[in-house]
Length: 400
Image (tube, rainbow, N blue to C red):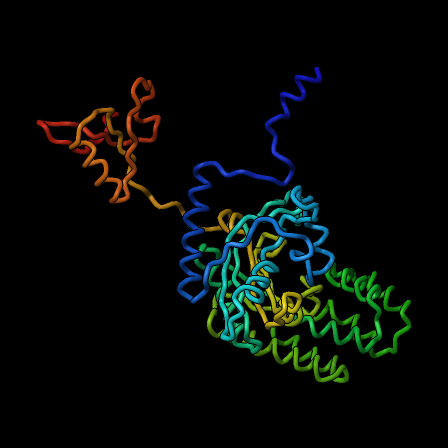
């Protein structure tokens, strides 16, 4: 009995680990080429970071959340601890700071598999095909707007419609926490409640802190401050005494939102001042793209100035990432109709070899017959066949 159970489960993949069969793999590859060509047209250069790095390099400066998501193994050559990447962004930051060291703004993109210890949500993958772009060396609003526009162009290239964009800013919560004297433990607990929009928990937590009345109102207002541009005016009134940094962050959001609405009118822009994803290493604006019927974001990003400091160069940085396979599933694009494959007989004829080479150079699929094969050409996916008629090889349609 035990052997039969073992046999029946031997070929099962680990939970959250998937594979792609030919039709889906073809769609993934088509979209991969489309997106990399898109990024190249915007000036973003492709980098291919290693699958595995020493842990102290892979996780430096990125916070506890990514540490928990990283598989650790020991290097058998020297005994040092290594990690399999769970996110490519820190690797690209290392490449920019430690390897490239350019003075001018640097635009980099990537597309590769990552591995995580846990899925992002119920039934989610642990091995997303992460694609994204990063812009280093510029700290102004222009670079944030460019990267957000590129993220939206990514979704548009996938024919994903009805996108709405949520904008937030880390400085708002950070400054309110600093003014209120929240220690790290309390700040992290409140952060978690805000992400869940757990208003009763927030009310109880704030009540226990014994903060001044105005500061209590600040934190109680945060989860309610989400909606269209009107909520920014409400935020200015609510945080009028919270300091210049908070008001500047609100103005920054207004500027970005206005720009995105102007250049991407089909995208619904909303603001969420409790949007704090990536809080442990993001330092400024954060954003996420959503579509109706899907609770989780389909792409996300933000500013993370200073992440390169651990590699000797604290360059300003902003970027986004998404999962290519999720985009394929959401894509409204249908597969392009391809000409049928052509069956070529197993004949040793220079003229046949010549026409096969010519057809393949034109992008046609030609499948050679193998001596002794019994499969019908149609079962190989062929709709046409190379036939020799009066000494000339021509392509004919396979008869039904």
